[in-house]
Amino acid sequence: MRGLPSIDELLTRPSLSDALSRHPRARVVAALRHAVHTARTRLLRGEPRPFEDSDVHEALAELSRPRLRPVLNATGVVLHTNLGRAPLADAAAERVREVARGYSNLEFDLDEGERGSRYAPVIDLLRELTGAESAVVVNNNAAAVLLVLAALCSGREAIVSRGELVEIGGGFRVPDVMRQSGAHLVEVGTTNRTRLSDYEEAITERTGLLVKVHKSNFAQVGFTEEVETAGLAGLASRRGVPLFEDLGSGSLYRLHSPGLTREPTVREVVKAGADVVTFSGDKLLGGPQAGVIVGREELVERIRRHPLNRALRVDKMTVAALEATLELYRDERYAEIPAVRLLEQTPGELRARAQRLQELLAACGVSVRVVETVSQVGGGAMPLAAPSSWACAIEEGDAAALQARLRSASVPIVARVHEDRLLLDVRCLPDTELEQVAASVASTLGPARDKGH
Ligand SMILES: *Cc1c(COP(=O)(O)O)cnc(C)c1O
Image (tube, rainbow, N blue to C red):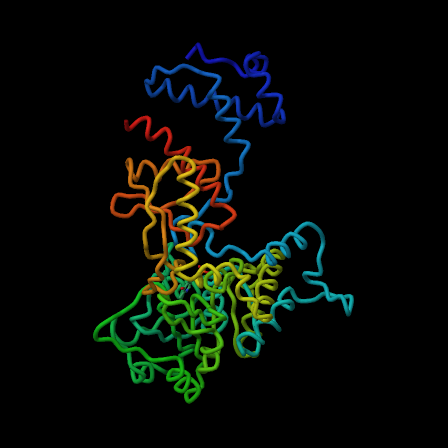
């Protein structure tokens, strides 16, 4: 331990002076502390390795790159929640940049010169695209569900099918959220079958909402029955109770690609008679993380005025990205929305990209096989969809070890292991990055090979 250098000594160590001079002083000091700490931890663990200059170089490299940074998605999962879900359209990213770097009219009405609404930029677009009367936007769809229930059903009963009391992922369970909102849950039907009469018999003067939760991340097969939105909407209006549907994904456009399943669009659900509908901004819609609430004016107004709305409100970057994304839908420029484009690629296109990657890898001395595979939509959407895709399969070496090494590349590559081989699914790899992927894979395989042979 006594052999560990002091920070002062390191600051003047000639072998480090070059490296240290390239960084701001505060970062240098933080890196030196970090390096000494690493070496001390090593010694305490009984490893014989003493302090080395390389500890400083590693600490500097670590502190010089952001912890949140771009990765290359070779998993084939388009809406990968762990990888940030939907990539934004260029137009949306550009709009965020414009609005984020300076002041904006976020809550300022430029015509009247007085306070305006931060939802104004997206309300008209959402009305046009969904057919709903009004809209409000919060941080994510989980927040939207919480807010709708709190505003419309607190202290009252929310009737929901047992087959829809689901966990969305990341510990988000519909019954827990309902409890947090102050709504009392009334479960009807059974896990596999719920009929209209089940809802009907549960309605009392305490009922605040009929709730329908879209089965976005799972499917039921066999002896099943559920009530469609239109059926529930009829009951709701006969009995004077609003119908709330948590749609999850909120598609604004019907995806056509083979292998995808049919997902209701927001417009269809609104048309079928749901009074309030919520959906995510960053699932199939392909925009920023957000929870969109659309529905009847009078209900949306109550939701907007609820105090929780203030706690869940979106910031200017979200409004900017959402407005730009919705404009692409309005203008029918679907191919410019990455989530849509990535899901609508043809097998021919994907195969050609895999072949191109194979060539680039071959030029780096790496031979791979081009194989057909199956991608996923991800983000808890279309659980049964199996869009076919193409991948480069690396069949040499230990697939799991190689997968780990690719994650530590300068631009990390996240790939999938299937049947003991590493698959680079090209669905979500941009054409412009293929050379980088090839170079990265080649340099990663290099050391693995030396070890293996
Ligand atoms: C994904 C999902 C949510 C949660 O949406 P986030 O935007 O991730 O908060 C809620 N309900 C359903 C049905 C979903 O599919």
